[in-house]
Length: 320
Image 1: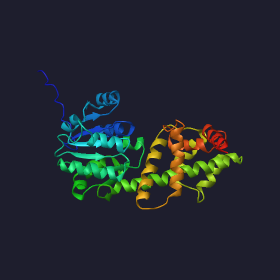
Image 2: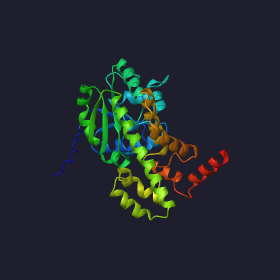
Image 3: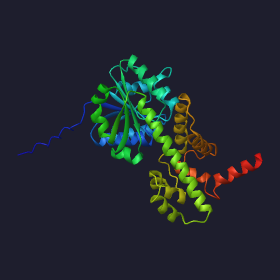
Image 4: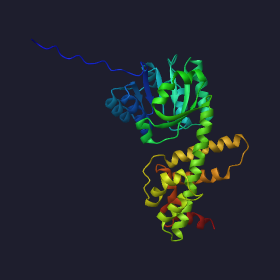
């Protein structure tokens, strides 16, 4: 008697919604991989680097599209993870191809650190097309994206948030609904402003300790037990000492985010001298061509004998 071939069990998906991703760099690609692992129906990916999009699509069984409108046509929920306000404007509000073409009924989950203004502008444009937007500002790293352990600050209307809460929970360890669109971007700017200031302060403290001849392992231990302790000491201290600046959060992005905070302060007529000084340091890294280093690379401007600090001294000497 011939055995009948075993029938394949249908894949049980957590949702029937088709998921798309625009911007599949290190964060976006790993979010897509995680949702694919959870059996979400990730159908469409797009990136200006077409080869990166094609490789990811092959890996997770999606389709890499070359037009933004094709992503919208082939997905119900689209995550966007882009670099800055200009990139956000180009994918939603650009002339010609746009994510908002045929966007009725779609939901856009915008995850990049951007200004509140562009988040509001995109949301209003989407609303006119009968689509909805969610800000899902991330305060986590690449490894958290891959394992679904992001910390998310959400900006959205209550009903839109509740409808998409399960999906947002599946990519995060914790999330906080801050308020309406724009409010999460404000809070994310505050988070990154304080983080960047702490990073710059630690680099200066360790750089001065090094110049005074102290053992830096001892200094880090003392810092950890005193008011000099910080999360940045834990994440960046050893990298600053060892000059290991593999990028988790780039100096270029730190400069951009400190700039967003500066813009918010200017609108409120507030003076933020520490933020201004920190932004100037990260801007200098970009000028020196090392903006692609991790933010811990700011130590290259403060440790004695390092290239960035030497160039800075020469520049100052010329001015005198």
